Image 1: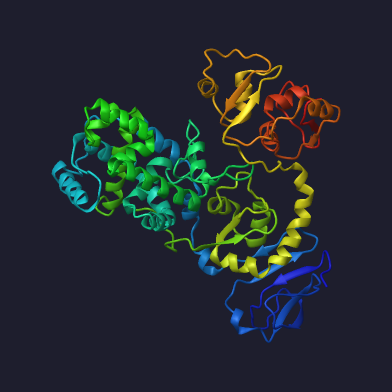
Image 2: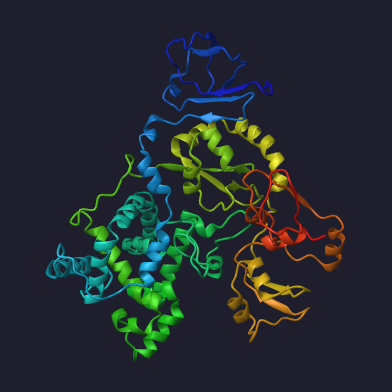
Length: 526
């Protein structure tokens, strides 16, 4: 019988009889994996006749009494991973640096005496012999390599540390599709191994999928989930896409170029060059970003393959590959609750589960949403699943009204222009640019007329437009939101699809963005 407010969940870890701080002992006979006892505050529980099978499992001690915390202690092995490694693992600030270096690469000569040109030529020749890429020496490639060695060495060391986690996953998927394993370095150039990276044009994830391309490979986007940020699903999609590009071009250098700029731009470059299919001949006919893209890839490949020769010293983890496992969720879970239950740091949960945009894992019928945890914590979670869901569900019930409705992003919508609409407002609502809306609809100016229909390819999910009758009906009874500590207008707007910061200020007659905990805001017109 589970009594509310007096609950202890713990595993069958046998310890010798001991007393701490003068507390009383309470001996309980046990031969189950998990037992529930009543316990007073000044009592220690000792398990008699423990089951030896579980002697070395994670100790689970969870007290749900006056507090709202549940804690699953971790294995000593996991605790060996030092704070420096965890900081490197969850730090995502390298994307902008890498992206900028590709866009603004200066190909002028770089003086770096530690790498003589003859040595570089010999090493590139060796790489060329054992990879399917055309890695012949040229001054532009030498400039990029020496620039990275001279200016980006620390950044590369951090990426090498991150690669210990991601590369085994990449290699597994690339091998399945018979793709050269060196393609794993492409993700470094694309995203600097940041699964939540988002480019200025909306490309997202480790492999930088645009929304339409992601949909082609079944990467769904909803108000809670963006599968382009899921390392496993996006890597499989990237492998499929790369395999299809190779069928088209039959050359891995051209596959890299087309992955970045699109097959159409590569085809145009081939025509403009007079029919050449050599990347270095086509390079001047490609977009500026693509022109720097393949040299950046080849330079990265060189630095990783010759890291020891250049004395790279990344902060590698004690555990070479972070062993993880997944659990299919049976109810909605938040990262805050999972962190309390498992003891896994919230930053680590975000790192292991980057596709959940709101730090909430939804439960949706027919959708296979999973929680990824370090393997020891996975076993502890599964062993106590029923009690964990009971604890979480009662707490989440209070928060559900403040969470957004689960809505999938459509590939294309037809938007009807209404009174007060302008292109900037529509663009913000759907997470796109004004110029894109103009291009999709062949608009020569920003002028709109009421009743006009626009085609939009949204990048963020929104609830379908209500009918005018429904809007009028709802305007008489607007929804409200009670401000909590830490809220901002921006964070509140993200909880309600289709609501903008400007909407909130207008509907609540606000002259500034200042909020006070406890104040009530209208979150719909009226």
